[in-house]
Image 1 (tube, rainbow, N blue to C red):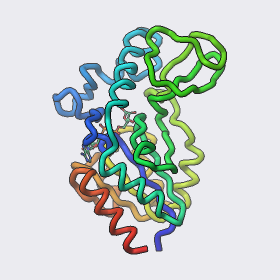
Image 2: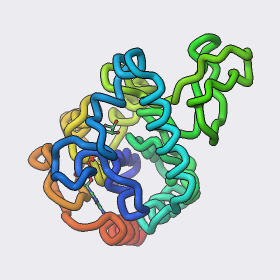
Image 3: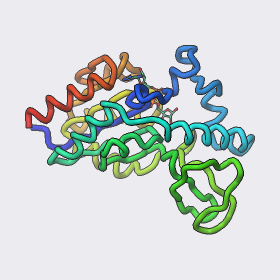
Image 4: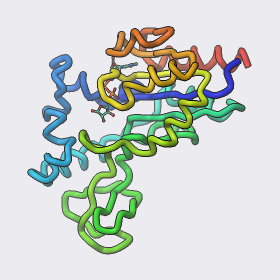
Length: 237
Ligand code: APR
């Protein structure tokens, strides 16, 4: 019987809301272009040290863009499952948008941080943030002009790995939605969950790099696959 569920989501769950995925953006098919920038040029601590204005401008643009987007049927279905599921459930998202929360989901863990938080590297406080960071505004907590996007860059450690591992240890079902399986440690969760006894299911537009590790893969758009999966799961309970 399924009691405890861990759901891993990636950029594919927000694609139909109009937010570019990472590895498909740029229209060149898998070159890792993201809004005309190579991911490594904007999403690493080295890039921030080398050209902070480029990185801040890039994230300011993304932060502004996500606020014009709306959750889609996949986010809504996951929120419905979260509200109705009596067992443990954790939505571990690699996404830095807030569309899971805006759809109403509560049990959400942002392992790669959040666009709508600014992190002060002077006092370590995270503050809600919707505007730009390029003009170096002062930290609301300490006044120092040392805010950066609260986004985990390549080479940095994802957030709350202990909580994620604890949830994976307890999981009866692990479901991966809209992620390419290219970026670790998230790409390794399926093997961990499977080794620990969970059933594993992938919902993705196309076979991902880790597809072979799943007991089952269903291919198609998230706005179709996720509501159908949630409906069946809730009907079985
Ligand atoms: N429905 C379902 N899946 C989709 C859809 C859709 N409508 N559109 C795209 N996909 C799938 C793609 O086929 C791809 O496998 O979503 C996946 C998106 O992959 P990536 O762009 O690599 O995004 P993600 O896996 O979330 O990236 C992981 O990499 O750049 C870093 O930190 C960043 O969190 C990000 C991490």
